[in-house]
Length: 114
Image (cartoon, rainbow, N blue to C red; front, top):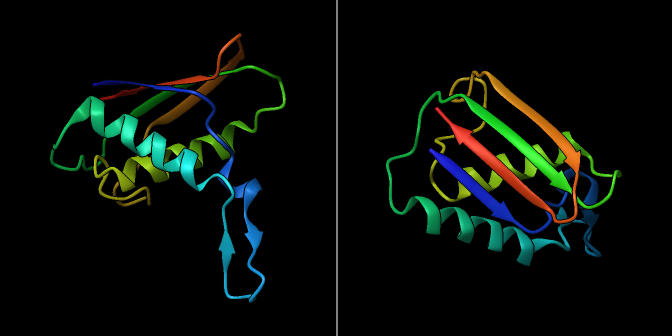
């Protein structure tokens, strides 16, 4: 299965801000994360969650400052939220999980799931 996510993938772990009430964090990229989940759902439809798949992810970033492991974390969380991965823990995603990146004109991520 191949997924293509268009637009920037934010590095979720670097974007969390403490809430004013000090009860957790909020993410200013919440709407973008919802869009990523929507893009995934539009490409895969309603499928059973995959258990122990291998993933190859390639990021295209419009600048060289992209935090690839942070982008991978965001993408895995969105795949779990979309229901195509059971979980992104070691039990359900033992690997291999590979990722790479390049500087390109447009932001995009390609995911190959086997």
